[in-house]
Length: 479
Image 1 (cartoon, rainbow, N blue to C red):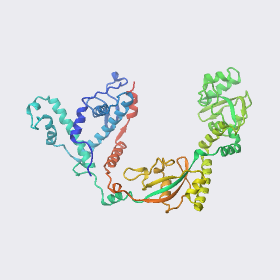
Image 2: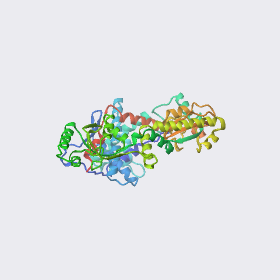
Image 3: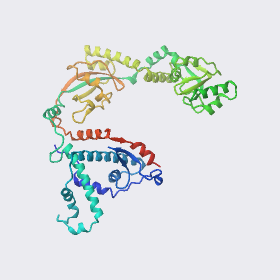
Image 4: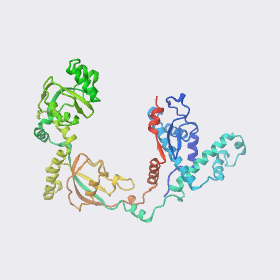
């Protein structure tokens, strides 16, 4: 397999780009700093953005790349440029660390060989005059940059192989056979989906009436403070009529549960119960008479004093707004009620499909059947094999849902599954077709990108790495 990657020429071009692009986001307090801030370290070596550092050079390279792509270089793109540069610096340091441990030294002849094209005429002949006229400092920098590039290239070739097919990770015959067969055993399905969002208003109303106390609406104001001592002080002043409730809201309240005037915003009974440290106290709050205030109540975020401003309002389950409230409650706290409703409907569907057929059951239940094209067992829809079409409604997360995959690939031909809860739906599958791998799919995939991705992940999660990039960037590189 031919592996795509940087050639030594490309690496040298990137190094030259470092001197072309200048990126200058403002660094907070830079005039008073004696040393550039550290973004972290690798193997106890600090990573700093300073002149001639690897990170500065990579920032220049990525900035040049962004510019070449026609992207505007502004504050919103600085973060991505610097983050990419940090990651590239870490990768370079890891490569140098690994190559140094191997004992490899870049031969001087190899460096000279890479420098020759820059001091040759149009016919490829060495031009000694061009070399002598180049400042020694430039020659030294070129040699250093080329040596560094050859070290990185040595690491890449040794681990991931070269264009010649030499070096790099090798794949066993068993692994090759496994990969070649990954697209075998494809399965296609018919699917019926019952969207949970279609829960009937009649069911919402029935649930609401059976749990009416949860949906009583209260008219209250609340003072919330951080500590009990302050709450006691506020209550004492209120009892002594030294301050009105409204003035105490303005002076003391954190307004965690209220608008700016102190009015309770989440004011249904179930919402009040949810903010209580002890839910049993919600009933005491609900029993307050108009104009009556509570004692100090421990709430989820502090200590609160409640005041009943008006009469409570009983729920009207014929109201569209109240049905929306019931639906919101169910989805937030008792979603199993909705799921169980559709699971029961799906079981009726399965029984009808067994008698009259899948299509007839879809018609009876007003469902438009979805057809899932054949796909192999491929957790996560890895690009190394054929994939499940997750654009089918209800299958957005199916490729990483073990229950879905286990069920789908355990069915017998023409067997109908039990109901599955998936992506806001209850679904039923019928295994209908087998699929063969195409000639293109049967060919051996190129796994080099997976090897490189795994290596990158290992490096960025190495215990040798101290990663302070985000905090350092936002503390020092933003105005």
